[in-house]
Amino acid sequence: MTEKEEKIEELKVEEAVSEEKPQEEEDFKAKYFLALAELENTKRRLQKEKTETIKFAIENAIDEFIPTIDNFEKALKCAENMSDEVKTWANGFGMFLSQLKEVLHNHGIVAFHSEGNTFDPHFHEAVETAETNEYPEGLILEEFSKGYKSASRTLRPSKVKVAKRLADDLPKEEEELTKKGE
Image (cartoon, rainbow, N blue to C red):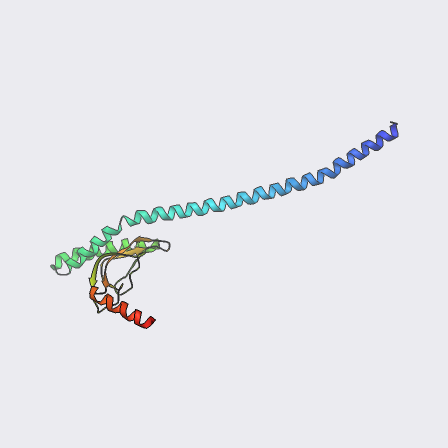
């Protein structure tokens, strides 16, 4: 090989290497941006999980205060029939109860009313049933304890009495449905 041919070969090699470098740079840039995007997604996911975990922990802690709130409400109802001195004390405890309810409200936890609504197992716990023809089946006749919920879940279902059709009326309804279907 002559000196001229060697120089031509060197130039060809350098040209091939210089063509590979931009491709390698593009590959590295693509990998860099992909890793950067994955890092941002991971940060967002971890932040969301952290927020949900904190919210769940707060809801669980507040859930433990709900029976205390119930007891305060029951005690204050009994105090209405007592002497003026007891009513004065009850007034102070009523203020304390208001503060507890405000804490619940500040964390998005609310009590919900059930009486007169249709039974929903996500929000209600049936502790008693009453056979009747006066009310439609599944109607909540009485609420024994309030239910509490947040935006995302039910903390405590309300304990309720639910209407149930009389046992002797069920066959009649089935016969009517059968006759209508024919």
